[in-house]
Image 1 (cartoon, helix red, strand yellow):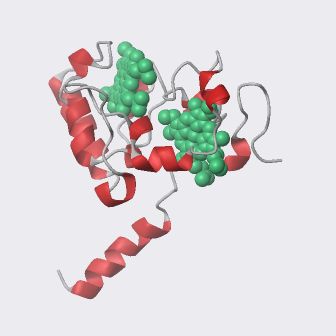
Image 2 (spheres, rainbow, N blue to C red):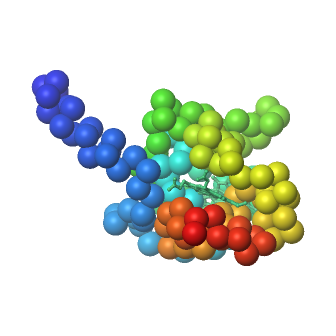
Image 3 (cartoon, rainbow, N blue to C red):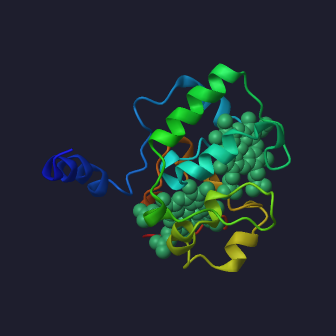
Length: 160
Ligand code: HEC
Ligand code: HEC
């Protein structure tokens, strides 16, 4: 591709890098299947490699079984990979032990964004796991993570 066309094609991505609003071409199964036990996590928050690993072991999904028929599984994998975050921006999800699935809550990007959150807030009984985005991001179920929507589990607003 022509170098300038390539840059022009990448610019909108850079400008909206932190725009996590739901993607208009998300297959309906993304919300119904991946948003039933937890929020449908924004695809932008993990790399394509990490999404592939998650989508290829749905029968052993962080201690749960999230299996899908092959057609739906492939459709969702394609969607997640299409909008996956770049390794340069997000970084790979760390895994505590070999053989464990990567976590978007353990990427360098996620840790940087949350470095001001206090240990006591993470440990709050209403949080349980960092993957419980809705415990603090009141509009996470709708895919919105704006700072002014954050209410910590003890009722404190992050931004006044
Ligand atoms: C049957 C319930 C269930 C379904 C359906 C499900 N998940 Fe999960 N998912 C879980 C549980 C449980 C965890 C682990 C939560 C924890 O302990 O932190 C998890 C964790 C995750 C994580 C790691 C979050 C982190 O900690 O960073 C990702 C990524 C993920 N799920 C993606 C998906 C995708 C994509 C789908 C749809 C294909 C899906 N899940 C469907 C139950 C489910
Ligand atoms: C214990 C509360 C808590 C949980 C759980 C939590 N977050 Fe956050 N998150 C915060 C706080 C507080 C900030 C703002 C930090 C700051 O500005 O320094 C934040 C910031 C963010 C931002 C950046 C917002 C911006 O405009 O800069 C994103 C995106 C985000 N979180 C996504 C997530 C996702 C996705 C999950 C679940 C996988 C999650 N968070 C879980 C508290 C939480």
